[in-house]
Image 1 (spheres, one colour):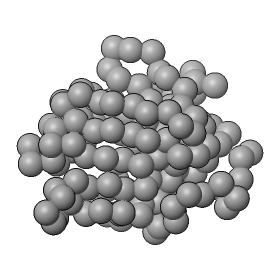
Image 2 (cartoon, helix red, strand yellow; image 1 turned 135 degrees about the horizontal axis):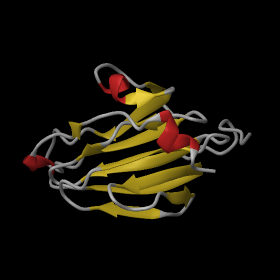
Image 3 (cartoon, rainbow, N blue to C red; image 1 turned 60 degrees about the vertical axis):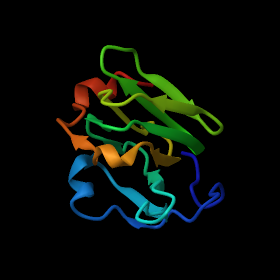
Image 4 (cartoon, one colour; image 1 turned 180 degrees about the horizontal axis):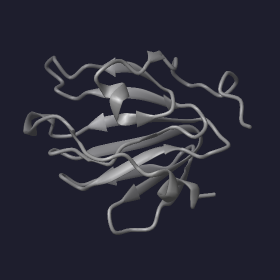
Length: 138
């Protein structure tokens, strides 16, 4: 299993707070690097997932960009095959595109989450990714 302690660019932060943690299966951590409540209007969070952790299906009215900083994980948009992610990968997610992302079963995973056009509103959280959907990924 990959070791989180030796491969971190940004501090992993604290355990994912409520109500966001309700939209994760497994343990995730959040370190907000920019809250977006200022002149930059650009929330950026360092999100770290323990092995096997993933978030629920969701969409962002203004879109999202993921910058993978460590570990191995997955991204899947509705109707598409899951895409394996590793450090250095960039995922550009269009507005209102239903998707999920999270760690591989055997690896921690970390990415910067950048909310784009956040004036369009917060993420809309949907149903969890089922164990059957997730267990197919290796």
